[in-house]
Image (cartoon, rainbow, N blue to C red):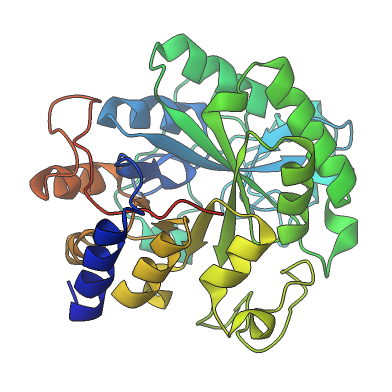
Length: 341
């Protein structure tokens, strides 16, 4: 751990600002897509066996207003096969244009052979022969699966999939959030979910309507598709501008009312993690698959990691002493946490 982090940790302890220890959050990205077909009931069921803390998943909305689990706002041409066995043609039809019955007529149990996606995850198991084969599940089906598993401590981190620049590809934020919160309340999952998004408009609405639910502010500063800038508001940030908060993304998220900051893992430093903790934010990074990266981020003080490889993440976390290697009960981290104002 870097020296500034140690100094801040010690200062917080001396000032009595540290909150009770928090458990390390092990999250299976899209249900553990390196191992099983992403965002399927089969993947979620298998990932539950890794004694993880959280299932990470994405939701969209069908033409008839049903929340379904899908990373894309469209049927993915690398995943969805029609009843005739052919994969859908790119770019794939929008979920918002299809009724649930049609969405669930597609088989999503095997990545398109020869695709870049297939080369990215060569170890993903093909699920074939199931009757019926893997389908795009509804969010209610995932709730039912988790409830039926008996794993009462497992939570869901649910991402709303919409883009402010593409308003015709998903419901508007008001309707999206109304549908999502309505289902969560009806299924009595309020205390077992977090809602995350790159589109912070939805998070603002969740905070207004369901303040008991933690909001997770996704961000990416690097790469080809950054969603945040430290010098201006972007279409993703619901009018919040880090320049108004000393150029600090953690301070911006605190001002927005967030509980968790979820940055791309290469965008964080030990100093930023310590700053977020001092503001009362948890830091859960995405998407980390290499053991060395996982180990380094644990050493740097993150509160949780989202990974395509929940098996690898679970093992490294156990080796680092932040997870019990044989069961769901986890050791407590010792990172201090400042009480928010």
